[in-house]
Amino acid sequence: MTTALTAPSTAERIRSACAKAGGAMLAAEGTEPTESPVHHLLDDGSFAITVPAGSAVAAKVVSAGAAGVQAVLEMTDYAPLPLREPVRSLVWIRGTLHDVPAGEVPPLLDLVASEDPNPALLQVNSTNADDGGGFALLRLEIDSVVVADSTGAESVGVSTLLGARPDPFCAMESGWLQHMESAHREVVERLASRLPVSLRRGRVRPLGLDRYGVQLRVETDEGDHDVRLPFTKPVDDITGLSQAIRVLMGCPFLNGLRARKL
Image (cartoon, rainbow, N blue to C red; front, side, top):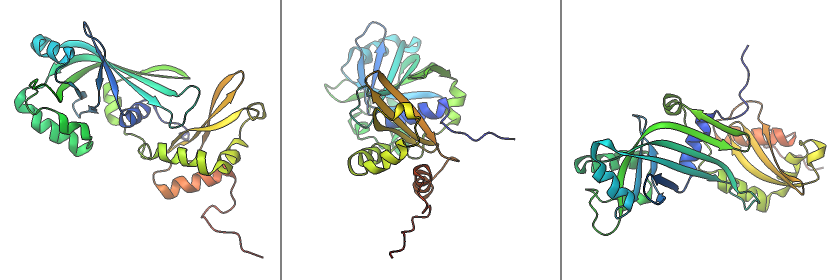
């Protein structure tokens, strides 16, 4: 007998956070934290990341040579709505930073762009040389990966991370939740009716949406409470997602049919 999955795995949550995070901070020993606009997981289990070409961390990595530099990449997953506590989760990737040899920069850029066409890739210097602007391309060899949210912290192995995929709806999640909040409060209210009575006194906001269900944030005077409303089964496309949400709402017209006018 198999148990239906009702929430993303830790590895799936991390992959989705990597895909959604607009920016990340890189903390390397002996340097100030530096913004990293590109952070892409490669098939070999390392991360391709970018830092300003003229930054202290870029210079330190080059001078370190084959030894590399110990560093931590921190990614923050923010809620799409202006909540009291906007951070949904934090991901910390600890490992060793290495410079990418000049001859390997163009093909690695092409590889990353084919999977994640981030506009910041256009600003990477093709030889990683500091020409007074742009970004340098580095590689972070992973030692450990940890994610933390309101439920606690958990680590995941690199092989497990490579075997997971981002949620199929993570790219559109922000737009959907913002639209739900601004134009379809009745949907939020119908979903809120599924909550325990003790939580219905607070302000209910849409917090998350994935192939396994919907998350709501209940803001009360006593604090915030996050509740997951799982779908009956995971969904993989827009049609399945729309139907699953209607089921959660208790809508009798599961296929989008309209009630016949009398």
